[in-house]
Image (tube, rainbow, N blue to C red):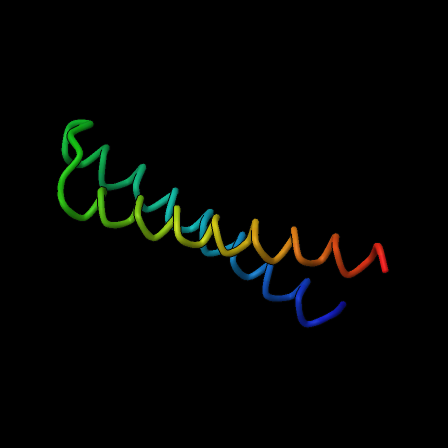
Length: 64
């Protein structure tokens, strides 16, 4: 497995962990979003954008 694939898999793993943590926090807060949930959502968005960029660049790399 290449370095880019490992990093993409790591990002996906971190996104899943953050989503699980959001579910836990929301359950404890009675399904109300607080600052921590909003911050976690921003982290997820940043990780998803990075992963999309990596995968897009990877597709360009394969086409050469």
